Length: 262
Image 1 (cartoon, rainbow, N blue to C red):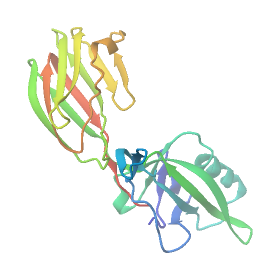
Image 2 (spheres, helix red, strand yellow):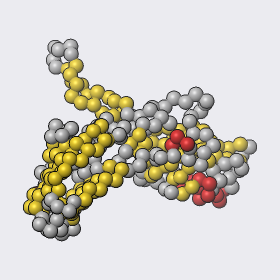
Image 3 (tube, rainbow, N blue to C red):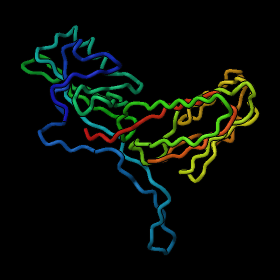
Image 4 (cartoon, helix red, strand yellow):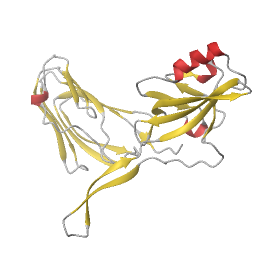
């Protein structure tokens, strides 16, 4: 439960406007999804009573209602300023609740509605609905940097503690050595899946967003034909990565998501 706490939206503090999250829901009893529920995708064959599972979806996205209020009446001119900050934005924004158990997480959310709270014809705030882009809140991003002074040939083990039951995809970058050539990363815990490049230039820098499947090279060349199209990903828990290739370094920015009940 959120009650009487400051919050940050787009890095702007609610204390700048003298408003706070004063409650969630309409009563003292709070019921909300913990995040990361699953919905099975099933299919039944004709005249067969058994359902077969084809996969799962992690649902629903995290949603909750909050009350944002001020201890003093909010004049009309200030309501316009606050309202333009809170409402009507057509993109997901970072919402941080300044609460002890939520200090290290944020919600990537839309504030989809706002209803004024009036007492004696004076406005004291709004009741709002918050809709997130996933079943999760987001924690800190883990940064991994591996540097090499000879051709890379090592096993690096990463323990993926993200609450996502699916794959976790990093943003990564690497630079080829002065020899150029190849890179491969084999994940023993993902059925020995191999992420690989061939035919890259000396000192070439590759940057990739594996979640969005975006690949760029500092040479300006289109390198998708040099890539085996198996985007790097991590399973939950241990990932033993065998990194082999003519590279100076590889960096991985790995997002961490968390289950948070509103």
